[in-house]
Length: 176
Image (cartoon, rainbow, N blue to C red; front, side, top):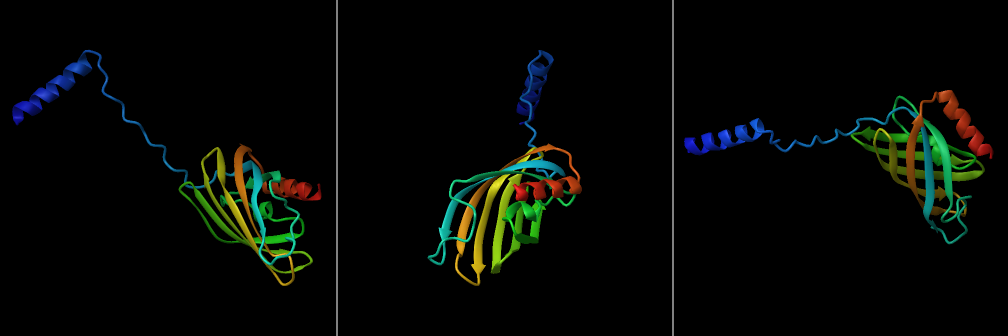
């Protein structure tokens, strides 16, 4: 047994000495623990939109529609709540999870002029360069217009930003 170990060691040493390279070990990229703060250009596309009460959905979104927004991810690593609502929605984030390349955010929104609430779930993976995932929405309005909607989410980091710049970007996009 000792002779076999010595022979194997001698062979390996001889290969290295003669210029043979041992196969380099590939380093696995460590998961990013939090989203890198900064400006992200986020594109979302409506991939499913269904009435849940048999009436016309009370949304301005349409099946297949795409939107692009510039958002500012702050030091907390969360995607801002305002990025997921419609004009007149007031959304707050509940139960956020941002770790090891994964972001999950539950949002509760109120829509101006509409009783009830909107529940939004963001489920995405991220790297230092960008984010990809899905956004699921379901409404519980006190009147007609309830719907469920699914959007794909894709974004890339485009640079640095401040919270004031992010707020101005979102306000400008809502006004358009």
